[in-house]
Image 1: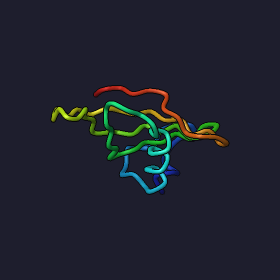
Image 2: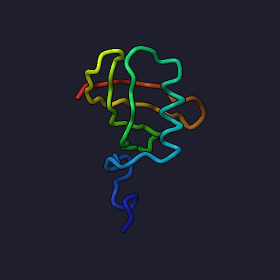
Image 3: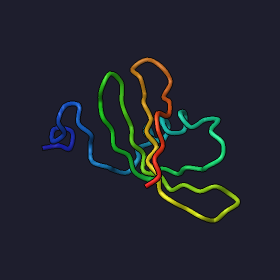
Length: 90
């Protein structure tokens, strides 16, 4: 059984390493975002009318060297640009 078959329709996938396509969605949604820098390292997706993404990220705000983790939630509509819907520090 594949990972996709194990996931319920409308359910979230397990977190997994980013694909180039995942990275592209993240980069497009974060374009123009200033302040905190987010570097995604894992993603979970949910297929709805489009796709919801939850990116686990390392976050920092240069020049400070303090780092923390965050979940950046992005929605990619079927037709349209992906956009950030929430950021949660974890």
